Amino acid sequence: MKESITKYFQPGILQWMSYPDRGKLQSLRTICCDDFFNYLEVSGFDPDDLPAAASMIAQSHMNCSVCAAPAFLGQGLNPNSVVEEERKKAEDFLLSLIPQAQALGAGGIGFLAGKYEESRKEEAYQALLKTTFNVCEAAKACGLMVEVEVFDYDVDKCTLIGPAPLAARYAADVRAKYDNFGLLVDLSHIPIIHESIDYSVSTLKDYITHLHYGNAVMKPGCDAYGDRHPRMGFPNSENDVEQLVEFLRALRAAGLFRPEAPLPLSCEVKPWAGEDDDIVVANTKRCLTRAWALLEDED
Image 1 (cartoon, rainbow, N blue to C red):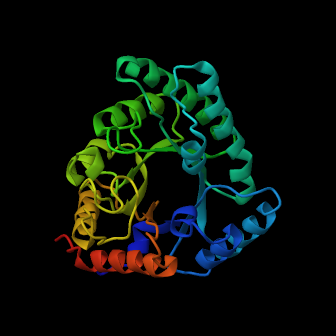
Image 2: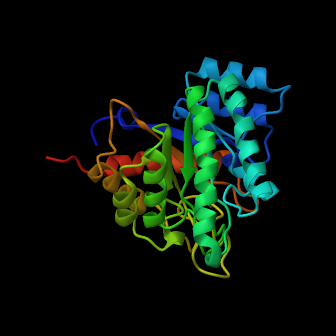
């Protein structure tokens, strides 16, 4: 492509994923000083660190969002639990992120669905809608977006959302009531959802407001098997530059190259077993730059 990728997307990064062993403020400064990135995803800050974090983000001219995934996975929170007390606990946590997002100048919050029992799948779906409606209502009053990331349903995280057709149904049901809702589609999750890139993107195109790119290993017994987000080109893995080009091509075909409102496109990768975090981040930047260069212009 002759034009800069920043015309169509906001290249971003997940702070907690790429810098798992570096202090939050230290890694935030590293990212804010890197002009490759226009978008930042954080998992929240301690109250004492919030003013310093907000100041750095404001100085950087980066857009950002706050993600509940680390807390949800770490604490076992489930927004689609059929046990009301458990569902409400997840909802209350999401509501608690809204004032933090406001303090950081973030544009929204994100989360993932939880585990479910196949025999009670529809009950879990209705519970997820209840949570999402309540969170969207509160977020809309504050001018914030709510986004749910599409995860695997039978390999690693085993969440309700889920296969693309169900994710599309869910998004349509929420959008019928709230326009401040969207789906986050991650290239690294597409292989472990057993879908093709074209199918996943084309099925969900009307609801996608956020994107991730990364990698996954689908061969049992190999390092980083499952949803572990190793670097691009990791041994025995599914995604590298070729798949990233395919992803970009599918996004373009779906009408998601939007210069008037570029979507976030964040790398979601982490260092594996002694790898250097800065080198792994540099890897993902090189891969995106190369993939963009290989993407052919349309006539």
